[in-house]
Length: 454
Image 1 (tube, rainbow, N blue to C red):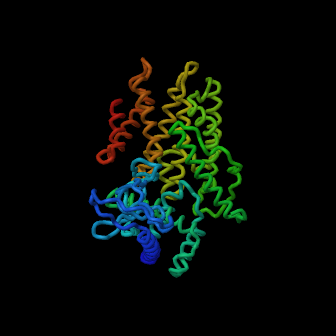
Image 2: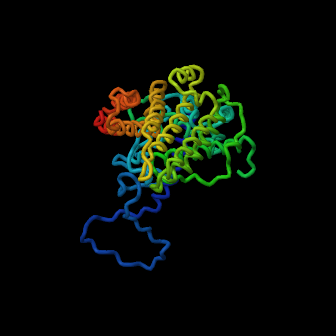
Image 3: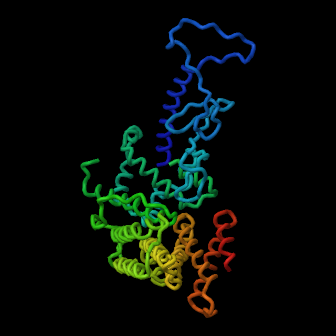
């Protein structure tokens, strides 16, 4: 399966190179002598169309060697070396100024090559890795339909694949790139390179698919804006959670499946957008009064009680048992729990001139939120560092806990279980971050910040 795809892209690139290089050669003006005293040539009466085009000396937006001789082909640059060989470069992205080992990585100066595209694992294993690690959290792809299309694509001959549906090929590359993030590779550079290389009359399944894609965008936007204190962008839609139809999900447990997970996250996100994201982005109180806070907390509790049983039966024993039955549902439960209790923590921690922080409510909600990250790290150790926003939430929760423990009211019992458990949470968070602090400057900085409170 590896060879045909490599051959396909190799043949396409070669044909494009030949056309571009031939065009460049026909337009390139002859080299002029470097003698500074050579007299300028007299103007001629030849028409403009016969004149050789002037060579631009303006630097391009390519990532390196922008003054070298180049030809640009579909977003990549080919730089001609001294020995006549060509190396392919990716143009610098203006959407990112640095690299990140996370899912949102966009490395501007990497050099993706065909040689390592399938070096890590068989491509179908990367697809399986996507369905195992990513799809539980963002269940957008109908697996059976995709695998049927995927197998049919590879059953075609090379010429037929060249004319196949481009959206399917793009989807395959996206899934391969995301699956690569959860594969152990010898170096971070190889992982970055491998990941980077990668209608109105819709039927009922297509409409269902589009709703799932929209909810993934909606959820990502909502819970990232909670962290970044920015106004949400995905706010106008005529799509409702009830529009999702029940399907033959690959896992189900006491009413918990992909559809119920999406509906639960969707309902929570709609509430969070209106009550948490917007006031935080405008630097306004989440609750103007104690009465309003109690009312808001009650509404969040009602949402939590509406979740199917496995998504709200949250303790270490039940999660481990759920992971034994369905690791997919365990992932979904931990993500849902983390988001819910993180937002509840922010509501309890809200304070201003007319209202004080609810210390007990904040510590209890923060404990449930950060404990979901501890369990995720225990059950899915290799994935905890990949989900950046999950880890970032856990750090911010530990920071809130540490601040409240440091500034606990005078007269509080030294052995108060509330504060003892809170301090234990901070110590556990520091221990997890120390595991990657040797090679991760972000983790090292976070360890330094939290350690000051211990």
